[in-house]
Amino acid sequence: MKVLDFSTRAAMDEAAAEYVASILAEKPTAVLALPTGETPLGLYRRLATRQAKGTIDLHAARFFNLDEFEGKGLADPDSYASFLMANAFGPLAIGPERLRLLRGDAPDAEAECQAYDAAIAAAGGLDLAILGLGRNGHVAFNEPGDDWGLETHRVRLTESTRAAQSSLYRRAEDVPTHGLTMGVATVLRARKLLLLVCGRGKDEALKALLAGEADPARSVTALVSHPDLTVLRDLSSVAS
Image 1 (tube, rainbow, N blue to C red):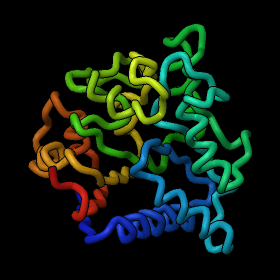
Image 2 (spheres, rainbow, N blue to C red; image 1 turned 30 degrees about the vertical axis):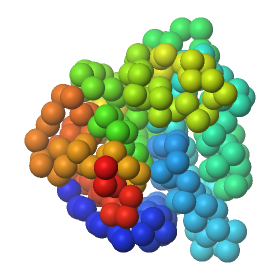
Image 3 (tube, rainbow, N blue to C red; image 1 turned 180 degrees about the vertical axis):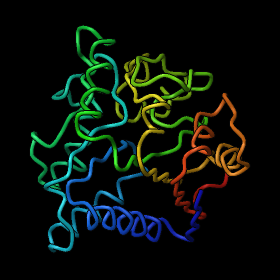
Image 4 (tube, rainbow, N blue to C red; image 1 turned 60 degrees about the vertical axis):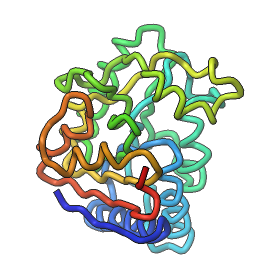
């Protein structure tokens, strides 16, 4: 595990962009898994700026998303897919042929999850999974107590996770109760992991990871077993 600390959010975002740029320089056709939420927005803006300047090119890369709300289709404005289109794929001008996103409105969630893992395998596996950290210690939608042996699967969201997503909806009760997520087993198969940590209330989960001991109550600690994990931490925002 490599941990890099930054005194500002801007510095962390720039380091994250440089990390992704290094992956693309080595392999322009890299397969990437992207997160949603506020944490990666600075990274996405910097990647778009670099692409506009011609210093990076993501058009040959392939993209997957980490998770999605159950019941939300790709065109649903409240879906994670829509979030990524607005904040990442749209600004980066990534064509639909380079995307395979989870379909939260699939009529058979189990079949969709199996097809998703099959699509990742067909793409050659993930070269990089970019992750955020939930306040309860989850990565993607892998909630406390979830089976780390699972691949992509349906999960019931905790109330704390639903509360953290409430800004995406007009009413808190509209936040879906379930989601589809890459499982810990799927995430750990990525050749490289980049964990971005910013925002208050996450210091205890981060301490658990840095302690280096797997804790079933915090799925982020499953990452300690990964051979190529880089953690970028914005010290200005992680305190409780």
